[in-house]
Amino acid sequence: MSITFNAFEIFEMAEQIERNGAKFYRTAAKAFKDSGIAQTLLELADMEDAHEKVFADMRKQLSEKRRGFMAFDPENQMALYLQAMAGGRVFDMKKDPAKQLAGVDNVADILKMAIDAEKDSIVFYIGLKNFVPPKAGKDRVEAIINEEMGHLILLTLKLTVLA
Picture (tube, rainbow, N blue to C red):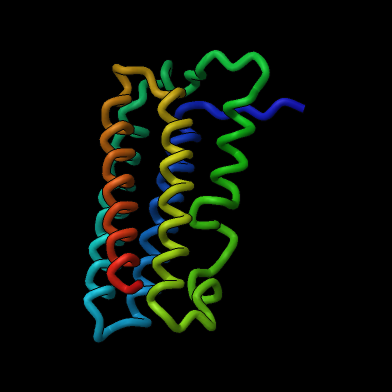
């Protein structure tokens, strides 16, 4: 059975990933109200909100013709990859952040969870980029990849300081 996504659906997935990331960071920040880490987590949540808006704008700008655009993928590899990534790896949509963070009582563990999610989002967006033609905002996806890499660096530095 073949699974396919059009560009419109892929942007919707990206928006959901960003919403999930923002929710995760806000939930994590509540656990550390007296910490500079909480402020960092809230800033990351705000960045995820901004990314969601970028993807929403890109989705809205798709013409009817481009809404069905698909990259050449004869063996359906990209579609399967994107489904696997969006469905459970990047800020898992099926898990409540509060439950994910239950029992996690130290900053290092939260930072490690966030680092893993950021890595997964980078990989997802690199795959997503293959679906986006230059005129439809490929450069904007690349900019988000670079911001997500910045998140990864920031989180890794925070984790290093704790060690």
